[in-house]
Image (tube, rainbow, N blue to C red):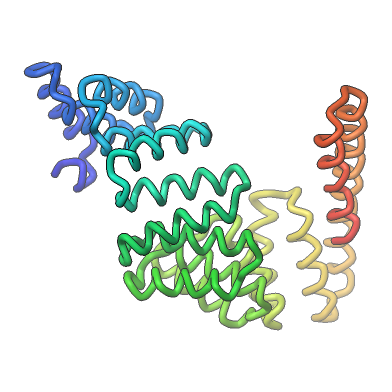
Length: 296
């Protein structure tokens, strides 16, 4: 109960006391790991889960908690393996399917990600995170209408779920529904502040919706925090141009141009270095980024 109410340190101490009383009690190790994960101490969470699994290899919950921590540390292949162990014990565990899907997506295996997250939603139709992860998978596959529908399902379950509104706003930009995208970002703001990434997307949506002064206010915030955000400078330049404020438009464009020149030279050097060291695929990846800059 303490952990559920945000009192993580108190919960951790209680689990530690339980372990002292009975070091062989696997659920106490799993519980301690869960709380450590809530505190961002993922390596320690894995250690606790490993101990729980040593004591009880049939604990699906320990394998799932371990998978969560591995994902937070970017160890996605190991996360998948932990999920597989959990699913071998409990094939209908929606959380394991959802975690597995997320890890597959991070490895670029988007169709498998979709299948796993869809299975999670079938098992738990009110599973908010699974609906959002399914939407992300669909978006990565370019199926934006289906992506939006997935976020809508999450929002119907819980209208205050900020992640669904944020991802929905970006997806609506991809389908050129810019006015509705702005509304999605505004609904997300009612729940809590936006990240810099989503402030940029809100500014972009405002720009494409013809609300140029509001777009400038958003994008000015972005470049204030991240002065080398060339895309934001370009869109601000376009906004000022549309408003007839040509000097300010030219200033923003020049800043974006200077950033792009530096980035092109940097990527070119990086690409050539990778080619020389025999890393052909990595070299192609570095150079391909140049085209995105030049076509901005």
